[in-house]
Length: 483
Image 1 (cartoon, rainbow, N blue to C red):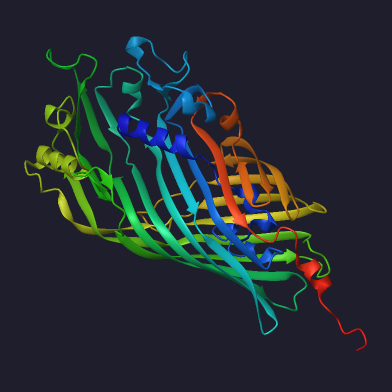
Image 2 (image 1 turned 180 degrees about the vertical axis):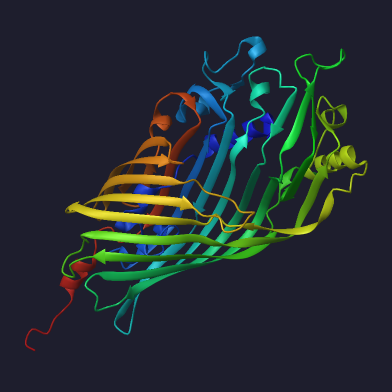
């Protein structure tokens, strides 16, 4: 990934919203329709007869390739960020507000933005059986590059690339889409000792943008000294024996330089969940809860998506090539055509046709919740990605433990989590009437970090009956005491 593109993505996502999945808030019984997207059965546990979400944002960015030195998320709004430059002694190791790079052999980059729009859920009694029905609207964007063979580390450290380098195969995908979903849940096995609940989401997906790149085999990279007329700090780099597939479609109009929203793809998705609940019918709260969900089973078909394939044993001049670097490129297609001309001598030969599919970020979610005392619960969440298609976007793996206090108009909690099973984060959340604020990685939001490369924040605004519950409604019912 070019440095300039990575910097742009990093700063845009960081400055706007950053988060790492609102798991502490989702475990709150009052989360209602907000929880349906990660646990289809959770809205059934709400003590409220109805629930309305006005807006909610949950966005996540994490990488081990780049960072901003000695900075916090809140401090970015009034700080000027400069690029590292070893020749000028500008480095994140010694200065603040420097966009610098980790010198790691492998690098990963994941982002996930989930905006929940106007949504609602309601209780319905059909033949004396309780059902929960909901409708949600959602805008999503997700992307990933995992364990990328970080050949860029040589240039980042101002170290000449080795004369010969065998770059391992890699893949990366990104996609943005909208969803309209129906949620339904109800109880099964009415005579069982525990309460069994099943739930499902059926989703219609509206594809907006997508990109997918796959290197099918190792790429041979060679580096030679630059000519006298070239930049002495940049070696000539050549690629050979490669086989790379590139697919994309975008709503960005390069001519008008505007983003024109229109549907470029369509697809279906499904979430399924089951929950076992140990609860006394005479009490509002359960003793323990065990849930399992499989999320985002499905795909989006981009019929007009553009496909290119570059496969050759000939050398492709990548760095210092004036045919590639001295060009004002207005679109991805223009760059791919330039590559095709360099490799094959024909700008259109790499084009292989239209249409491709991108799989949704399929994952499984386990949850265990134990009541410690009245209104207080300990929760454990485990999320493991399980892509079901070769070309699929992927979410982050997560292990989260949180402790929360939940009452009708007030909820708060604390959490610790392991993202990708190796980065320990701490968070907290507050639910105060209609407003929810929280973070699963709160320290980078408030305090300066030596290397700011991930942070977390989420919010939601919703409506529900703050001062009412099932028990109060039951007590208000009139009874014929003489019968």
